[in-house]
Length: 440
Image (cartoon, rainbow, N blue to C red):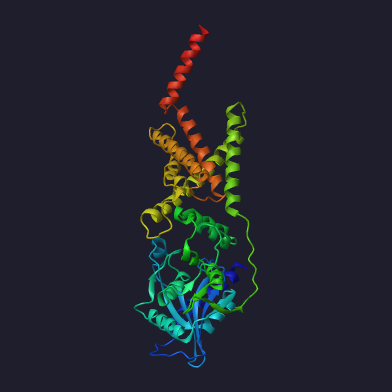
């Protein structure tokens, strides 16, 4: 079963790659095309799909003119799958997208038959002169020397390029103010699209910074195609007088596979909450052993379990912390800076991970005492920031933060008991001296 599923996904990727390459080169360069009165210009909205690059939907222009035998799709969401450095460029925030021009009929078949996505068309009420102007702009923008742009997840993508094109060709013509956007932050707008992908949602919310916790202003709402579709339905164009006319004159569903999106359980929350419970239970068994329970097997197993839990969480948060460090301070991404998750998901955890394998009596343990203290302070600071509304946090984050807090307290307690904590040693000496004088 897995073999046939993998084979099916392989053919989908190959088909998608071939489609994109063909779409770029199927439309030959044309000079001085004059659209007829039968021509129409539409905004096409493709609903979300299964793959990570398609879960937020897609937007494109369609120019249809039966007289000139034109039915083309102008797609600002094209990128090169076969780039040898694709993953590296994506992580660095240097991924280039470009405008491709291809057959709309071929694109419609691909979205409907291969990706099983709903396709919605909104015919724009531009007159012939306006349609010609926008068509010439798209043609010029689609030339090899003009078509490439630096992709940005929120500020510059396939959807924002649609309204940017209209505003550049017709400055001040279209008024979108009638559309009342939901009062949600960028971050919370993304969450419903990731209901079928809880692990993807976990990863995205983990690396997004505080800039995504504010609400969009003006055209910023158009970073998501479905919101832009709704705004187009209510938008108006200013006429020569003081009146207005609707931007969209006709809407229709061109393809609808009838697929249903089912929200999946929050698996990351279940996983990390289970680890926290197991870890806490193992500590309880160790405490009972220290209080007189002589069952060696139980204490031994509980010690191994707690060590494995700590190792996993320390290694996980440490590695993700390195990724957040790179995305914040070194990458070109505009939405991964000022990330409060860095307070608990930090490379500092790698020090605690290494500390698991060092001998208890080594003097290097003092370094781990410092790391534990710092981890405890940072976790507390994170919880205060979240309580103050500085940044949104997924429920699945909190079991990890609580785990790190308990682990830090445990490391501090163990290190102090070994005599590596001056404050603890001073308190013990003082308590003994007080107790001794009381006996006399």
